[in-house]
Image (cartoon, rainbow, N blue to C red; front, top):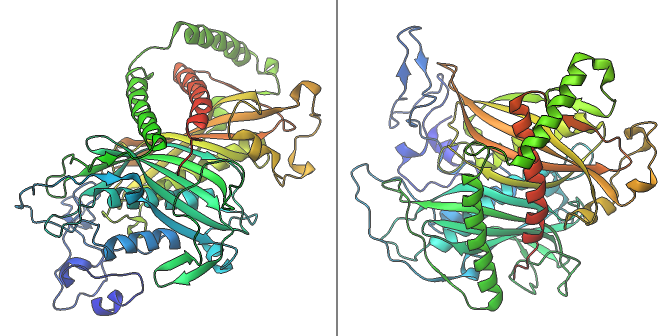
Length: 522
């Protein structure tokens, strides 16, 4: 296939000279006369051509990846059309002085629609095996949405300065307020609610809308919109929207020439509500720094936590000496482990030619979900994801190892989580055959729910040396009805105990963050 024909495929938008748009990836790819040959690394040991796994990318693919969800594709396409994406700069280019432009919160507002009801064909990309919506796919769209809002905020409106490069620094929180319906029209919305020097907090929402959705030239729009703002979580509001998910992302800006941190436009706060959102964003940033300084990787457990670790050690030692003494409702942490390996392909890249962060979130969630199913022997419900730190990008061609385990479990009251009651009260579609036999609901379990933490560690392996580096750690909170047999997770090693303490801390933080993430977004 010639380069000209490839560029005619819907989804590719040529914005650069032809020779920089696409290079062959496969060794049998036939290059036309005007295209440059492949660049790579020759291995002296094998005499074969090697794809440069951990080295800077020398291959160039299409500027606009198209192997993503329709909503993500539309968001990325709009960025290119509006010239919000940085274009490659010469290595000798000098940093350009930027003019900071004060922006309102709503200047960064972006929205995208998932019209499952009005256009059922859209659901084909999101449907899971039981007819619901794949939450991992929604994670991909959230990541793309956060990036679009950040680019909108950083845009200075000048053609003389190249756009900044925006990357996802962390996913601070995702709360599911109610189960995502597959037979309703949904709207994703996002805007910037706090800025630092080079960082931005993005607040996102997913809600059900009851207005009529129609096709437009670049996607879908509401035929007669009643508002252009995200909605506060809760019951349907006066405009007929029902919020079902809220999230907080942190994005950072980088200079497209030097790659160093770049200052972002300041926020203009116009209302008391905006000032409150900004203040809470500042507090949240400070609390993240405090938690990083007191994490178990830097500081020892507290005295109370050490007493708990010692108690668990004595108990697990007793079970290890005589397995017959271990109760049926106790499971060793090591027994919950699951692992997957994925070879990262160029189809899963982002616009910066690294593996798309939303795709990594989806892979981690789906492994965590499998771990949760095995742990409960029924269909669990997702409650929250919190505090994902993207330590380093994942290169195309990397071998990605994901390792999941249940690190903490606890029976809690429904009223504990601000988001829990709406999720649990909805039909869970769990048959009696899914429930563990012989575990009748006791009177003290009324108003309770079984929750547990699943941690997924992501490691990138260098296929030439076998060295593995941790790039991400994902923390998921799941739950099952109190009618399902409750298992107590038991650590055995000191490392297990630290993960148990971390899971306990995450549970306590989740309760606090679920309230923080409920604040109105207008």
